Length: 109
Image 1: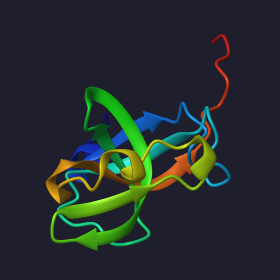
Image 2: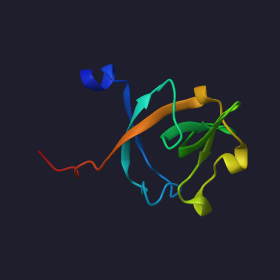
Image 3: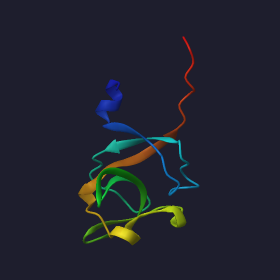
Image 4: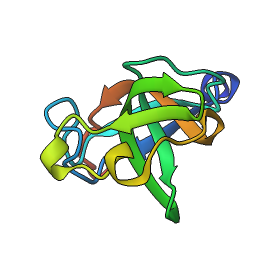
């Protein structure tokens, strides 16, 4: 990664599920700030699934409580979120998403 990406602790993710439609579509790429420190209601974040370490989820913070953050997908019919596993500790948030982008198709040089 370039120096600016390292300085701002940026990391990228590919959206692979339908839980955040219409905001995020499968195949979208997103940039996130790693270890954001704090998150607010409305932020879209990346967390490890509490029951499946290493399986990352993209969800929206819908509430902050004494136990951490409550997460929900924007497409509730296709989302596994805090309704299924409860709130997650705020420290479990891996990144706060800041930008959606679409990489250009690969082409020969």
